[in-house]
Image 1: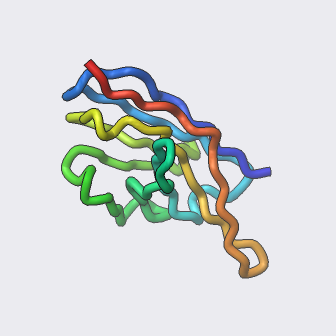
Image 2: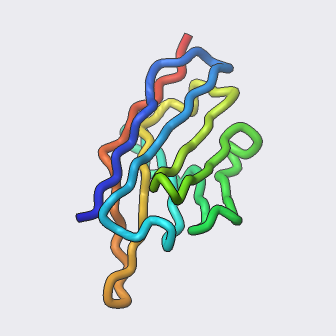
Image 3: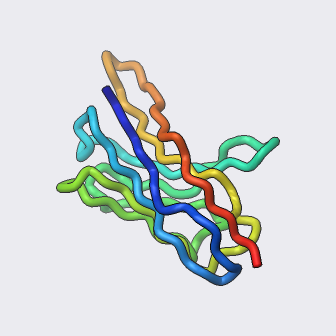
Length: 120
């Protein structure tokens, strides 16, 4: 079955950096775009970054452009999010997402999330 396991979250001071990783299994990883979302209590889940199946195309939320970088390693079935110049407003639960099409129907799969807290 599809599994997405995030890691790398933690507590960091403003201006600091963190690198999130997501290990994927149970599907043909190299065939699908991957995404990172984040969510804070009381708010909708927000798309942070996306990367195409072979990594040639990336997209970012305006709020993280120039600070975050999404990447993937199709040989290791992992997708990462390098977060630099972190701000308190980046504090959230970060989720890895894969949208997998089965019999022409897209299904969203999520990891358990990893908490990022930016605070002095």
